[in-house]
Image (cartoon, rainbow, N blue to C red; front, side):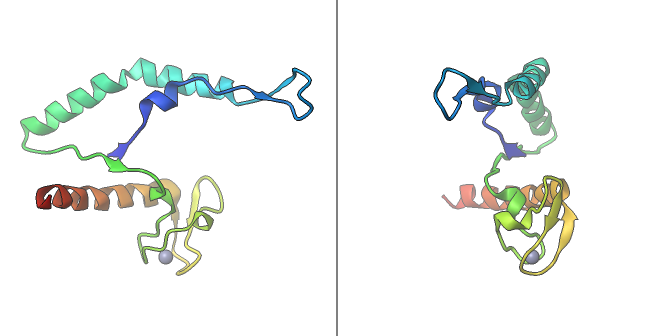
Length: 125
Ligand SMILES: [Zn+2]
């Protein structure tokens, strides 16, 4: 699974002062972020992860958290990593090989591949 920094996800967005510093603050997306924060709190993320790990362990499985940085920018076909591979929020188009996919599916495949690699690294250490 994707390693998420839940603390940062539920923190309030910082207000940004307007360019003229007149005391007027610009929109910072707090309304949308508060909805995400509420959802994360409603789920009880830490509780969920604990149940997931216990359930996995009970059947001999391991939950591996992988670093999510740039994972949605990596092409599963050729391995090229670039911000430009994401022309829109939902689309993935590799600028090197032309591979096209749904961005969420591309990230999911990368996470799936990264998990076993991370476990192998941990065993070797
Ligand atoms: Zn590619």
